[in-house]
Amino acid sequence: MSTSSAPVTALQANAEHQYTITRQDLPLACPMPAMALWNSHPRVYLPVEKTGFAKCPYCGAEYTLTA
Image 1 (spheres, rainbow, N blue to C red):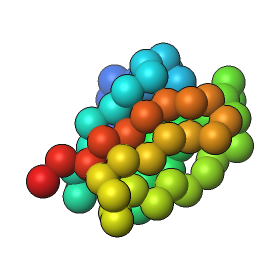
Image 2: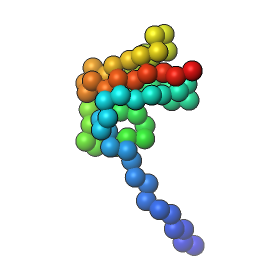
Image 3: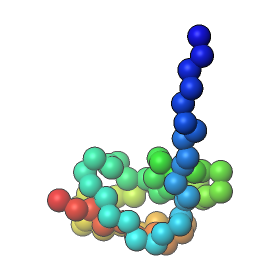
Image 4: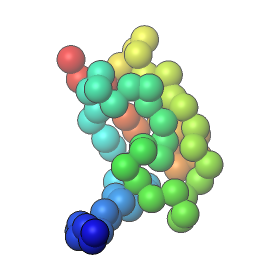
């Protein structure tokens, strides 16, 4: 039995500096799960729930939580 599927392409990590996220993206980690990890910094979890904003200490990416 053979199955064919299109290759899954991960988003480039740290390609942008500002990201808008929703509650579905929580818990927030940089790089985010859909991003490639091989060319990025170690994954770090960011506390965005209280203030609605978080900045990654490694790459400086800014995350804003929308309602």
